[in-house]
Amino acid sequence: MAGTEDKYNYGTGMNPTCQKLILATERLLRRDGLSHVTTRKIAQEAGVSEGALYHHFRDKAELLHAVVLISMGDFREILDGLPLLVGQRTVGENLEHMLQAAFEFQFKIVPIACSLYADHLLLARTREILSERGIGPQCSITVIAAYLQAEQRLGRVAADLKPEAASQLLLAGSFHKAMFDHFLARDLSEDVTRRHLREMVNALLAGIEPRPAGKN
Image (cartoon, rainbow, N blue to C red; front, side, top):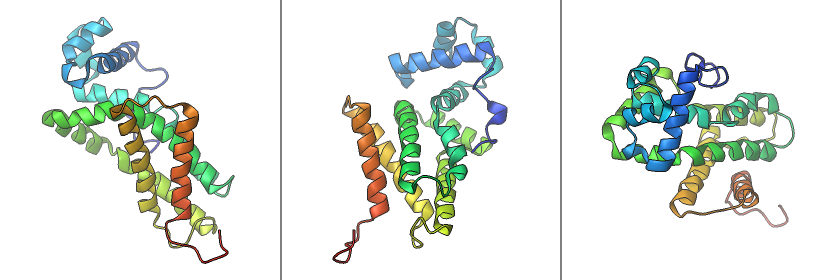
């Protein structure tokens, strides 16, 4: 995942105007919802001209993409570090740590992702951006699958596990939880959330087939 986004880096050292626009977009999204956020409102909230906005971002979709990248928090760094964890600690611990970061990221972007389905033009433009830059959810799945494959070679993961399917299940499970926590306005503690995510990892590692008597 690292490297594909370097030319679109919105992290440390970004242009101050870009930072203002991204933070303004994030505030408006939380306060008003995607359907009420326009580039004009974003520029006003950021205290810059609409022309300045278009100097740094081609359109609203690019701004939303920047907000998503900023929202990744530790998730990107943890994904990039997964290859270094092969053979270290336990597979369960490594997956749980990754899934916690994934959930935090997903919880932040669920409102944006779900709202996109109500705006077909914005959704199409977002897909275009992901395609242009070679990024998106599949990148995360690929990284996690590669980690699981490496652990398979060490004998720490079942030989018959399908790494990509397992990766999809983990990320889909945490996204499902993030979406319904929003939808049902669940105010769960960090400890409860961490326990739920740990149970997802444990369920994947244990599988669902019955075990022969006497085996854990």
